[in-house]
Image (cartoon, rainbow, N blue to C red; front, top):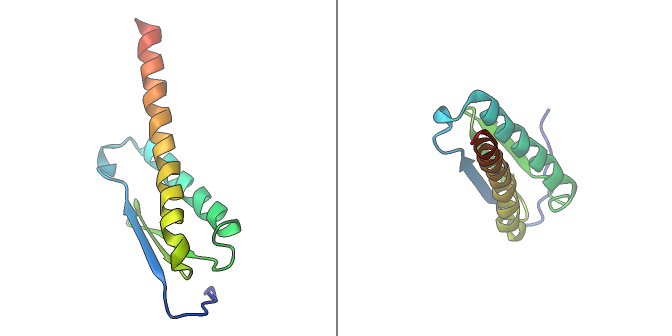
Length: 104
């Protein structure tokens, strides 16, 4: 089922990303990153990108691509997506430090 994207101009923005060194991340954590990205895609399409209904896809397991028909919103969407993924990484680091602290 193809989505119809409303675009009043010919301009689009493409957002791409990749989880760096994902092969070295345990599969459970990698799955959390992927699920966070999927959730973020849904949130972005409900809010910021509601007018354009951006097409997001995950490919090769850990790479993302999105076509945004409102280029003026692409940078903000990218920042939100990156922040969401980094917040998971930050939580993992904090949990690991707390675990180490509790075992000392």
